[in-house]
Image (cartoon, rainbow, N blue to C red; front, side, top):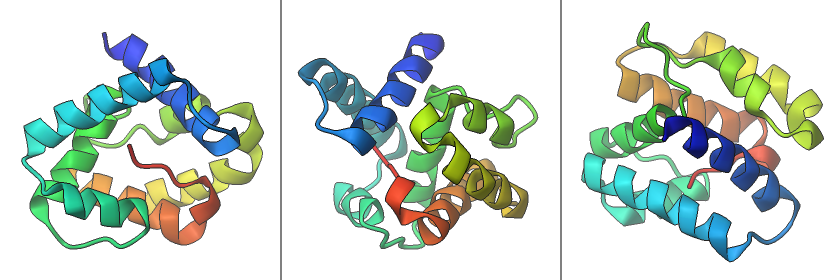
Length: 135
């Protein structure tokens, strides 16, 4: 199931960046969102703000972000974000311009898994908002 979510996540990011999403892709991303929303218990308003780059220091929001990484297979068994895995999953259209940002941000994150996830999303937005995507 995680492999399928990884593929759909990659395709979703690519499609979201290039054009509108298919109904099937929207359903898959909605499912990922719903699962992580339920798992974390975060207020949906905080997610909406984070999608626009407004990051509030909220533990549930941080754990929502961790859930996204977990469910897309981007959180390693070592308790750290798999930066190279993330780079390898980037769509070709954004790999060259965005990979350095992912690597830079991945090198800066620390703390608990939820904290790392939050810092990674925030850093990616701060460094390259044109490629930022949070389901």
